[in-house]
Amino acid sequence: MGIKSFQGSRREQSMTTDSTTLRVKDYMTTNLITFKPEQPVEEVIQSLIKHKISGGPVVNSNNELVGVISEGDCLKQISESRYYNMPMEKDNVEKRMATDVETIDGNMNVFDAANKFLESKRRRFPIVENGKLIGQISQKDILKAALELKGQTWK
Image 1 (cartoon, rainbow, N blue to C red):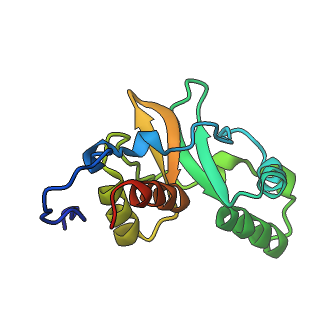
Image 2: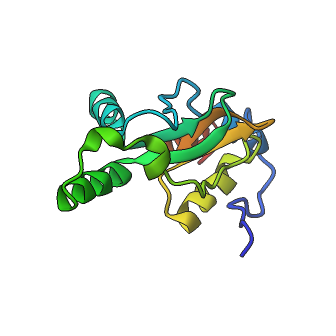
């Protein structure tokens, strides 16, 4: 199933912003809270609570994306450590993170990105360029872009 574009046919309009220039990388978050594979899960939990986030990218020492860890991954670890009566301190991010991570192209149009969010049911996508993590786009970022566009071109 390919990505569908939200851009249908248009009447000639005087637009100050061409929607094709509304790229994901113009709206992504670049100041990310990231985690390391060797980090204890307990530290991740503290960070998620402190920063009021639900997860974050996991990067190696070269800032290459190697996974994502979420609240759900941490909850699973807590549940299993209690069930098997194992101390939490021995568990690290690498053992709990998801490694099958879908990324999004920073040059993608925000409308195509909105469709990708709808199809995938994900809340955020990491953005990788030349193998390095450069940012993350969330559904909220796409909503902000849509409001900005509406203010300039939607009637």
